[in-house]
Image 1 (spheres, rainbow, N blue to C red):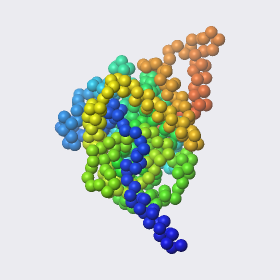
Image 2: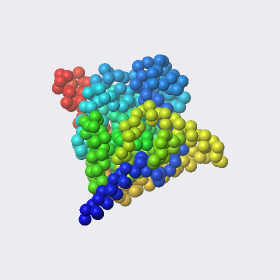
Image 3: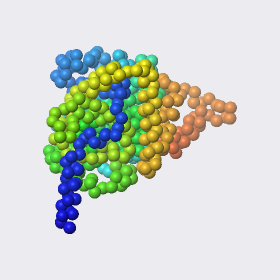
Image 4: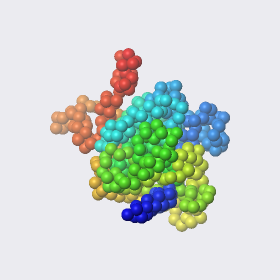
Length: 458
């Protein structure tokens, strides 16, 4: 009996110690340069939030950034956010026709960042038919309330032709992911921007939404993981991770030991369990029993099961979380992909791009069907919101000026709009006004404040 137990333990130790980060994406397909090309650029924009002066940068040279400081519309610091959100900037990229909102990652010496992480409990916050991180959702709503008019004005001034791109790292990745979900459902807050013009890039993503939402919004949210990064793989709540930040290796080992005895089916059936959002891009640069870094390759998929569920016991688990390393390896990977593609191209680029777009759409539909077939709680086989938002006309204002006109049946436009809102609620769509009313309160001057802070400002 003792021999059997020892053999079992030895087998488990061998499997865990030989498990490497690249095993998570071994069956995934290779990403193309066209779909991955925005990632290094978004990395540099997020890194720019850390800079005090973009004209005299510290982390990269001005040529490496490739940014025009005159195109920075707004920079917001900790003093201005008052702890409601991490610092961010709004940048209008005329070269790529994008309006970018970039949010920085966790600052280990800022108490306000820890408050955002700690403001959550398992199953505390429901949203859009699933569960999300409560503190990150409040931060996303605060940011949208503050900057909706700015972004709306920029989008209108550019003729409603620019895409809206959200980018965030670590803590910021959770904020922008939930921000993208809100905007995708309530584009009227930004002038009627359609869902197909919204993109989000979550670098070193935090687990911020349940599995049904992570798959549902895989067409607009793209998560980028560098090899052995610990954060997307750790099912332990964010608040517990950063409580134990100074003993993180011990925590990861205990979590690894615990998850060994939890069946995969039980994990999938728990609707409160949070995951990294959207489509996954995995940058792989190291191999088993090999020293040094190899030329990076990028793999992509919309996984439903085996979605970065295994802790990697690696000395690079924390270094792979850094935005600087992600930017460097993403840039290397993009150059390698571009060089390889240029050497082997046999079809016109436009045809390749159309074929890849069809493949991405098919992968998203397949992931939705698989989530429904695995009985994922609240999973939808078809994403009705995609079609609904794509049919919405750009530059459509949130409020209509002809709400009092009567139709042929004698029903007013106001009544017709109320009926539409009632149907949307019955279909599980989250009502924006209900979310704001639940999380915020107005003071005597009419300004919005978080519920816990409203009485202090009176």
